[in-house]
Length: 188
Image 1: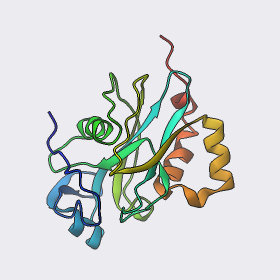
Image 2 (image 1 turned 120 degrees about the vertical axis):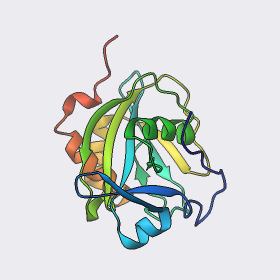
Image 3 (image 1 turned 90 degrees about the vertical axis):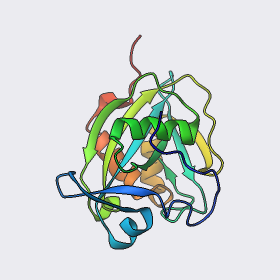
Image 4 (image 1 turned 90 degrees about the horizontal axis):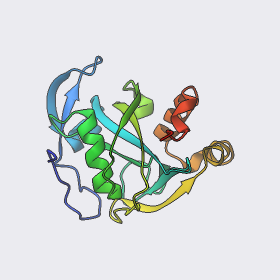
């Protein structure tokens, strides 16, 4: 079903051999390189970030594993990850939800895209949202902790302790504030 499955072994260097698409300034594929090379050379590449809400409208945030090379121990979006070579944003987002949270979303809504630049680690970031009543089963190799938060609590947290959240999350949250409807549950 997915183009790649991660090995569940924690530790530095876990994804160094993972092959990613390298893209140009317009998010068009121009080549491929290993995860390690992409980050070492600051090459543009792709990632998906997913905001998972429960029926009460609370957002799930994850604390990144302490061994992660980028932003270890910081709080981040519900699930996120690089797209593998040849993988599209939608498929990558669905895969990350399964791998990191054990969630099989019935629907992923694309919210917006953030251009690649220094503030995103040269990643084009496509942000999705989904709602679930499934039990979250965080992968302990990827996630140190997780919690459900009211959107107002997230806003206060960013104002009070921005250094405890990833830069990418703060950037996408700022953009999300202009898309207020994104953090209201869908009426069924």
